[in-house]
Image (cartoon, rainbow, N blue to C red; front, side, top):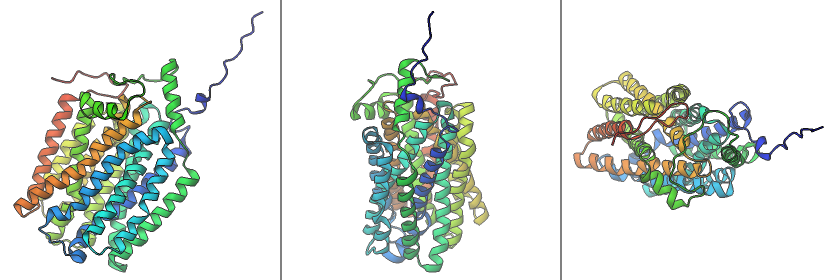
Length: 442
C-alpha cells in the first residue's frame, strides 16, 4: 500500500503576497509614507516666501532661489538608486530607519539658518530622507502585494504621501502666521521625525523575504495568477551598472517610463517654487497660497485612490499618457486664468493629472522588473524621476531668469509634458500582466 506523504511546507509559503493577508504591515508602510510626505510638504508654502523675507533672496533671482531644489533633487535622485541596491543587501527596514536618522538635522538647520545656503544644506538631508524612506515604502508595498494589485498598492502609497504634502502645506502656513515661520517648521518637523522613527523601529517589518519568496515561486513554476512579462536582457543577479544602464537606456519601455518621471518632476518643481511666487505676486496672501498648493497636493493624493486601481483594470500606459497631457493642460491653464477660485480649479486639474501618471509609472516599472533586481530597477527609475527636480530647477530657473518673469517657465513645462506623453505613447509597451502589449513603434 502506497502512502502519500504531504509535501513539506517551504519557508517561502510563510510569505504570501496580497494586501489582505499582509494588511497590518501594509497599513504601517502607509503610515510611514504619510510621515515622509508631511516632512517635505512643510516646505511647499513657507520656504519660497521665507527666501525673500528672511534671507533677502531677490524675487528676480530665480536660479538662486531654486538652488535648494537643485540640491534636493540631485541628492534624492542618487540616493533612490543607492537605496534600491542597498536594500537588496541589508534589507528594506534598515534603509528606512537610516532615512529617518538622516532627517534629524533638517529642522535645526532651518531654524538656525543664517543664510539661504543653510536651507540648501537642509535640503541635502531632506534628499537623503526622501531617497531612503519614501523609496522603501514603495518597494515594501510592491514586495508584499500581488502583481495585479500593484496599481492599487502604489495608488494608496502615493495617496498617503501626497495627501500629507498638501496637509503639511496648509498646516505650516497656518502655524507660521501664529508662531512664526521658523518656529512652525521646527516644531512640526521635529514631531514628525520623532513619530516616524519610533513607529519604524517598533512596527515595520522587513519585507525582503517576500521578494525572495516571489522569486522562488517564479523559478519553481509554482506562481499563481497572471504571469508577468519580465524584461529580458539582464542576468538574475546583475551588477549596479548593468541595471542602471539597462533601465535608463537599454530597454525602450523602461527608458520611456524614466523620461516621463523626469517630466513630471520638472512640473512639480514649477508648482513647488514658482507657482507660489506667481500667486503671491498676483496678490494672494500666504494662507491663500497655502490653499492653492494644498488643494494641488490633496487632489493628487486623493485621486490616486482611483487612478491606481484604474490601471489594474485598463493597463498602465493609457493613464500615464492621459496624466501627462492633463497635467500639461493644468500648467498652461494656471497662467491663463485669474482669481483665487480659478487657480484652485487649475490646481485640481494638475493634481488629477499627476495622480493618473504618478503611481502607474511606478507600477509599470515594477510589472516588468524581475524580483531579484526589482528594487534596483525602481531605484533607477526613481533616480531619473527625482533628478528631474534638479533638471527642472536648472532649466526653469534659467528660463525665468532670462525672461525676468515666471510665466515662460509655465509654457516650457507644458510643452515638455506634451512631448513626454507622446514619447510614452509611441515607445512604451503595456506592462500590466493581464493586458497583452502592442509592439512600440520604431
